[in-house]
Every structure is written in structure tokens, then in C-alpha cells.
Image 1 (cartoon, helix red, strand yellow):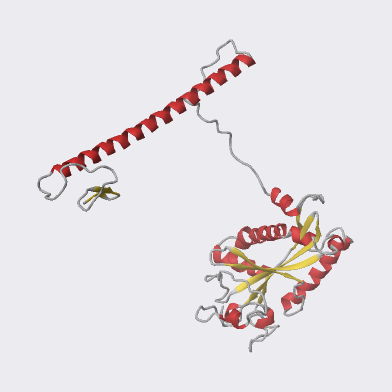
Image 2 (cartoon, one colour; image 1 turned 180 degrees about the vertical axis):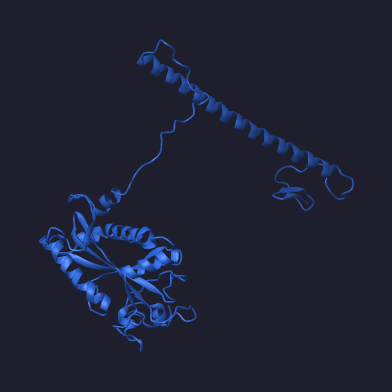
Length: 338
């Protein structure tokens, strides 16, 4: 926030909850970069590349100073400025491939945590974000003759929760380390195979897999409504309401005719209205009785005060209405005032 105030009016800021307990790799924070290819918006067609890679911070993770970029950020564009960064060194290139990451999680958790927990959550997030932005994407100029390669960034916490950090358009395809030097050409080749559909039979789409293909949306329907409708479902069982106590008597074996049944319903409705009117009348009568009782009590108290010999100087008779003088008892909102 201090940084935002200093740069007031220069850019747009997004506030996010900081994840204090990320999953650490050798004490270092990390995130996952996943390539996603969108070849069509209507119908929404999403391709998922077959391998992600892991980017790590240069220094060990501590919360003492969150302004220390080398501890809290994993972007290669930042980490490459660390004095010990080495794109060829296994440790100081600060990057793993998916196979090494998967093997590490299996050793730590005793099962394929990446394949069973992390990867499915990544795929769900990809589909959800693109469905949520389908309407905006459909309004882009030239949407019918273009594609988009996206870079999704995910963070995994200590409980294997997978969090989407951001989605990058035109992600960096630089051969920054030995890991990206191997993966980037495969991504580019696979993208062209998907677009032109001219790949070999054994790998027609390279290493991309079709993750999602939605229904076609007609022009007179809102894409966001159609996308949301595709995810809606109704589950449960029919619940019958209990029979009301004052329900109609069974019709018996001889069913009534339509006119007779209608007449019977009208009669019952009239009875209900009469019962309601009688209830209101009784309520009004009770309220009237209460008002009269209160009035009698006030009059009785007034007479007792006037006749009391312990209050000298008071009139022995109650004054008439509107004749209140200096020694007149007048009833106010809080009781009797002398």
C-alpha cells in the first residue's frame, strides 16, 4: 500500500491475500508455470500442455521482510539478477522440470501428490477462468480468426492447496535455463500442430491435450449465461408437504363434478374469510376493553388523590375539563401532575 500511494495515478493495483505457508522446496518458495492454448472462443476450445515447469526463489523463505524479492518472488526475470544465478547450474538456475517436482512430492507425501491433487486443481482453475471471461473474449476484434497462448501461474501451499496467481498473455518464451530451452521449442511446435492440424498420427497435437470444448453459443444468447448454465445441476428428491389439518374431506369413491368441486371450494373460502373477520373483530374488542379498563383505573386514582386528607390545599372535587388552575390535578403522559 505504501508503494501504491507513492505511485498514485500511474497504474492499477490488485490486492491479494498473501499465502504465508507455501510449500517449500529445500526451504525456497516456488510456483508453477503452465502453458494453455485457446484456439476458439465459440465454442470455447482449450488445450493443456503436457508438462509444466517450476520456478523457485533464489533465497530461503522467511517472513521477516516481504520486500525481499529474492525470497518472495520466483519470476525468472527477477531471479536472474541474483549475484549467484547460473542458468546452467542445477541449483542456481532456480528451476525444475515437472518430473523432478513430481518425484519430490512423492517422496515427501508418500503418494503421487502432483497427479492426484495439484494437476486436477490446475485444470479446474483453467476451465473456470476461461468460462468466466468468455464473454469478454468473444467481443475481441478478430476473435474468429485468432488463437491465444497463455501462461498460467500457480502456487501450492503446505497443505497441497493449489492457488491461481495470475494468467499471462504472450508469456515469456525465452530459453532462460536448460529447462525452458527444452520445453519452449516443444510448446511452439505443438501450438502450430494444433492450429494447422498437420501433425503426425502418433502426435497430431504435439504434447497438447484437449482439456475443454464447450457448446456453440448462438448470437442472440449471452455467452456468460450459456457458460454458467453448462455448469448448473439440480440434485435431490421430491418432498411432499404435509397434509394440512383443515384439508378437505376425502371425496370418496364418487368423485364430484367440476362445478360441484368448485362450489365446495368457494364455500370453504368464504368460511375462511368469515373466520378471519371474526378473529379481527375479537382482537379489536379486546383492545377496546383494555383501553376502557385503563381509563377506569385512571379515574379511580384521580378521585382517590382528590379525596386524600394528606394533601392539603387540593380541591375536594375533580375539576371540569379545561379548568385546570394552579392547584388542579392534570393527567400528563408520565402520570398525575399537581
